[in-house]
Amino acid sequence: MQDATIALERERQCGHDEAAVSLANELARITCAVWRNDRPFVASERTEAR
Image (cartoon, rainbow, N blue to C red; front, side, top):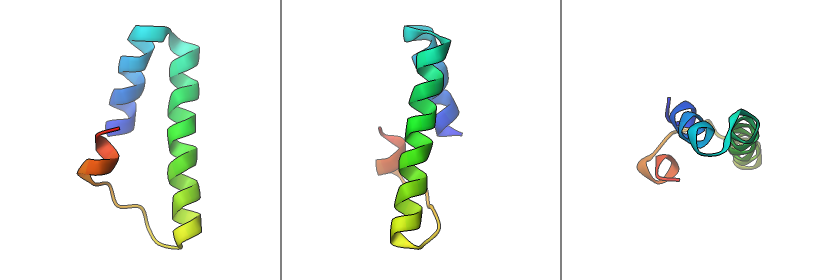
């Protein structure tokens, strides 16, 4: 799971609270895009590169 890896790296850099907010923000962006486009989420290299 790419988002978890990003969150763990962020936690090492900035602490647990900021990592949790960062992960929640990324998941919220994905959720909004899925709802807006009315199609399932498909991870791509572009998405994972963030």
